[in-house]
Image 1 (spheres, rainbow, N blue to C red):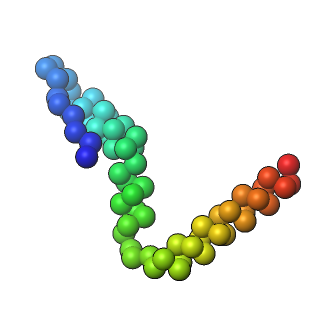
Image 2: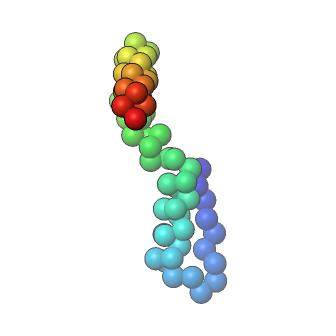
Length: 62
């Protein structure tokens, strides 16, 4: 969990900026979006295979 301590004489905007950066670095939002809906293992495998195929095609083009 991202956690920050507000420093003395620090504006709320600066604290929010630091918090958002920590959340983004920790990957919390990406994880939340990934877990928003249940995805069966079969679908996960298909997507993984599709991504690998796409990556191979991209490498082959270069």
